[in-house]
Amino acid sequence: MAGSIFGKHFTIQTWGESHGKAIGVVIDGCPAGLALCEEDLMKYLNRRKPGQSRFATPRKEADEVEILSGVFEGRTTGTPISLIVHNTSQKSRDYSEIASYYRPGHADYTFDEKYGFRDYRGGGRSSGRETIGRVAGGAVAAKILQELGITVTAYTKSIGPVTIEYSRFDPELITSTPTGMPDPEADKKAQTYLEECLKETDSAGGVVECVVKNCFAGIGEPVFDKLDARLGQALFSIGAVKAVEIGDGIKAAASKGSENNDAFVLDGRQIVKPSNHAGGILGGISDGSDIICRAYFKPTPSIYKEQLTVNKDLQEIPVHIKGRHDPIIVPRAVVVVECMTALTLVDLLLENMGARMDYLKSLYNRKQ
Image (tube, rainbow, N blue to C red; front, top):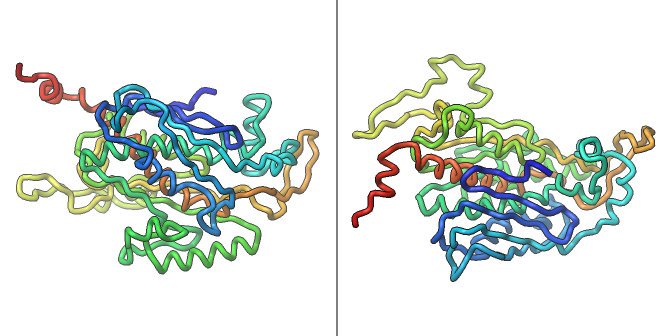
């Protein structure tokens, strides 16, 4: 299968299936000397693991990660880092029925058309469980960014019709509410909405917003590897993401130039912007402002409500999808968005090291 590798300089290759023996990632390009242990990775993996609330799949997995290579005496060695998470709660029999038909909204039909067969147990590589490798790799990237003073913070902006109010923003709530919303009132309303969806045997979609602070100006390559283009690829590669925005996003299309342009002003001798409609990116390059991006997630396609589909005998049939599924993907996807953003930034930060001669001189002109 092509397309399982992300990045150019700091790369991840994810592997494994939802109902296989294990799932994991190989990270290459990580600089030597980074302090790293399993606990650093678990802080992120614990945020995406299943079974943590009524609004997540009841599948119980510890998702405990093991570092197989690339770390010695608590620090990275510069060699590939291999990470593994064993699957311990597979119930493949829950999926035996769907081997004969295509679930609406899933990759069943397209996988069959592409490969001639598919792993019907939870979707195989198309399962959301594939994101374990992304999160494990992203945790390493996030730690590199922290060493540089750069922070990446994602949270649920909206679920269905419920949207947060920034005046009530409390970052502590991101990891303590079942919705991932940093607004206590919006969290309560969203939970009520999700309860209604559950009663109707239906699911919901939503939006994850991500904010990067303290990123240097000048990151991103200005043609095909623009920072916003690479972020778009990273976020669109997450299953169920159907739209991505940077800054004002689609609102910019309805505004005037005089409204959308961010002025430049001086703060002492530093150039800053009093507004940030561009979301911290101009010409595909970071401008030093907060980088703001959003990923729009469709509702979970696995619902018990009756749907119409076609089986392999080319018969139209009604289906009620069984198994253990998230009624909403968004809360567990928050950390995935955060990690894919971190991976993108680290990759482009490493690429940027060769952009200017003074960068190379500062690195290699060492006193003898």
